[in-house]
Length: 169
Image (cartoon, rainbow, N blue to C red; front, side, top):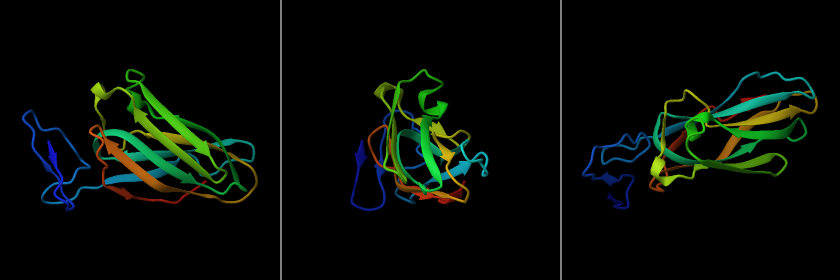
């Protein structure tokens, strides 16, 4: 069971083997999960697709993630979103991804849908989500994150630290 005593900590008592919770609060210290963006190729031609990847980790028991991706709609056009294979365990676990493009802000969410599968453990090896953008005109464009949230398989929010929030594409 979990006891939330109103502070920045959580007491975790389990009768079974202790699970790895890199993003949990403990009675001693708060542990943060790093969230960051990377682009494969920071230079794209007009009319071609570039990709921005969202990484999290190290993290244990990650079940769902939500993030808003901010970009300049004068320079880039949102094309696609895809989940990394780590969330679905290479297609073996059902997931759902949802998004909405608001012209300069893509609101995205990804979750596992099989509660029995639990969450994922990730050490920043693979992207959790990727967005594809088409170059519309010359210029540089920063892609940044806003409203990022991570949830474990018990529905408890995880503490995050956003690193390298602005990525140039």
